[in-house]
Length: 140
Image 1 (cartoon, rainbow, N blue to C red):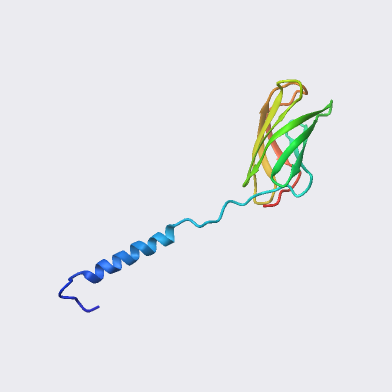
Image 2: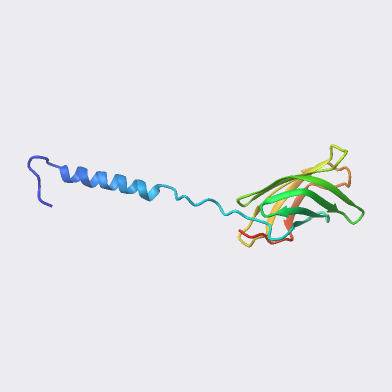
């Protein structure tokens, strides 16, 4: 490039400005949101490592209003609050007439299977805290 006697180094300033502003466009995050996962049918079914099964009413990424939790000994119905946000699953089953609850959190994997953990009270049906996997394959 030919030197400019009136503005020595001027081309360098223009080059630096172009690189700076061009770089901004390279590092600006894209407007793509995280994949929104959804339940493809009317229920999200989970299996807990301790042997109980959970069937949650579902409508896309919305979970509830109800759930059925089954152990080999008994079945209990509860009310659900929470849902799916992106790949994160977070919901609580509350059992009517008691302070008993189970809180489930997890993440949907690239294969559509969710994995997570649960915590809660031992009453009314003696659910142990620990890991669970979805039987239902979600779409993302």
